[in-house]
Amino acid sequence: MSFLSDAYQDIRDGVRALCAQFPAEYHRKVDAEKAYPEAFVDALTREGWMSALIPEEYGGSGLGLAEASVIMEEINRAGGNSGACHGQMYNLTTLVRHGSDAQRQRILPKLASGALRLQSMGVTEPTTGTDTTQLKTTAVKRGDRYVVNGQKVWISRVQHSDLMILLARTTPLSEVQKKSDGMSIFLVDIKEAMQTGMEVKPIANMVNHETNELFFDNLEIPEENLIGEEGRGFKYILTGLNAERTLIAAECIGDGYWFTDKAAAYAGERRVFGRPIGQNQGVQFPIAEAFIEVEAANLMRWKACALYDAGQPCGAEANMAKYLAAKASWEAANACIQTHGGFGFANEYDVERKFRETRLYQVAPISTNLILSYVAEHVLGLPRSF
Ligand SMILES: Cc1cc2nc3c(=O)[nH]c(=O)nc-3n(C[C@H](O)[C@H](O)[C@H](O)COP(=O)(O)OP(=O)(O)OC[C@H]3O[C@@H](n4cnc5c(N)ncnc54)[C@H](O)[C@@H]3O)c2cc1C
Image (cartoon, rainbow, N blue to C red):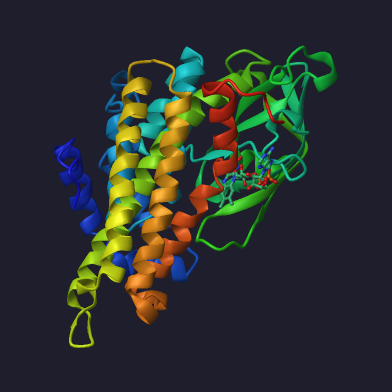
């Protein structure tokens, strides 16, 4: 149920039809086995949904962020988790916007056909966390190669991807004017890197999210794998992050509708004290409130999509959409589990799984506090707090 659900109905119908082949039992089994939804991601790729943002000249569908966001929303709304595959959507925007012609020709058609996956992006580090400009991983130019040393943490989908975009410092912090200068991004061939200086250690975690610690010991990356100009990587990453935030907002909106639909259906059928529990305002109101908040977040999501697709600055809107949607989906998750009483905790209802999955988005890929400080500083003009 949504007032805005008729937007992009053809895409919604197509993704729903595919998702119907992967019902709740499939996602429950993948979660229980801590597996990767290979068959689901393969089907999405085969049907062309994963190449929505690849320009047509490289074999993709050349669609905008709005359409891509509908794909992600529908996966979550159908009970799945786009977290398994959303990386490629936003990572490839970095390559499309900042990669060389040669890189685009080499990689994009293979992403479109499914011959390669670009699901991974390595930014976060254990000792510096959100304070990205302080990151310690270095890439030092030696001849026609960069030599990488350092460590990353929480790097997702590495074991189910062929390529990763890696952010590393190429000029020491002490030698740059602005701390966001002097970092660069590289394409890393994951399988090759795992033989030549990159160690991958999986992190067991609360959601079924394939995420890892990475250790770099003199990993050599050919110079042709530098994306864009050396030293400008942080700026390039930020353009991808606006796409990432907007897509994740759409996923949270999909979750929000899944939770409110599920809660309303259960509240209508579960009878206690001789009447449906949904007849009690104490049960109705949290579901109604969550639905209102999901609808409101959705408006900001469309605004962020429209600005991004028009090539306009959209940092504030992308961040605000992600903030509102993550909060709304979490409230919806709470209302849904509460409505289900004890049954909300039983795996077979899927509520506890989706509850765990949607909780992530108030922390990653950017925490709510950091969005608040972005808005305080960049929109309201308040002094920088860190
Ligand atoms: C499942 C999962 C998958 C992930 N996947 C990836 C990935 O693929 N690639 C990648 O690069 N990263 C990934 N991350 C990392 C994620 O982006 C970070 O966890 C997140 O940005 C927060 O960084 P941190 O964990 O180091 O927290 P910290 O920076 O240590 O912050 C901890 C808490 O303190 C708050 N805080 C810190 N500084 C301030 C401040 N100045 N003002 C107010 N509050 C503050 C934060 O908001 C946060 O709540 C993933 C994380 C998880 C959990």
